[in-house]
Length: 190
View 1 (cartoon, helix red, strand yellow):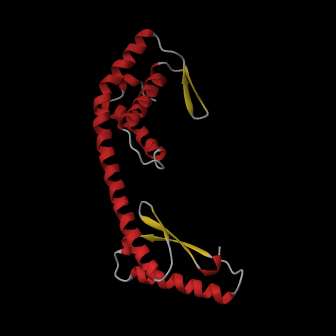
View 2: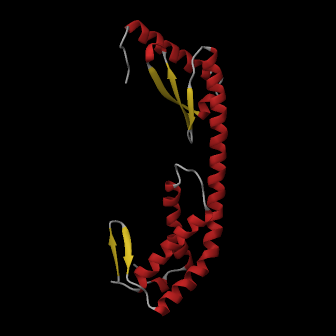
View 3: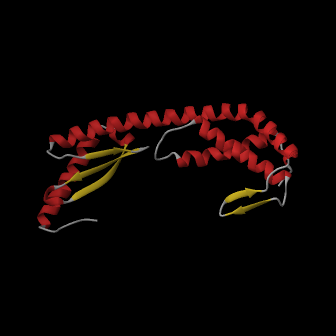
């Protein structure tokens, strides 16, 4: 690894931004983006890079986490200056990531709402009550069929824009229910 003082500003920023990918994976369930939390992770990444570089042999990686011996007072002051210098540029980059993330989330919510309306109205007209759950690029649909059977399938949002597609999936589900009822009691598909 290159010594910290030989790294360019661009290389240090790239190293810090590596934490964004992990942050986005961690908020996948909550879908709440916090600029400050993400910034803290990026700064932690730079802090670790600094400590591994300026104090070689004074750190250890155990179970995926880095552990460091305390820095001297001079090194601590230098590290704080480094972190202060990169806080602004990192914040600018993270704001751009946050805007993209929020834009994608908004589009997904709009698509999920549209899919829910289309699928529910189509299926309710046939007497079925689907449970529609929006995902990023598709909707998960669960339908209870007669005689206690359930069917789960996924519908891509872009397919729902095709004319007559909702009627096609309704017909397929009704055909499946009819086939199961002809098989008699206890017939199930897994």
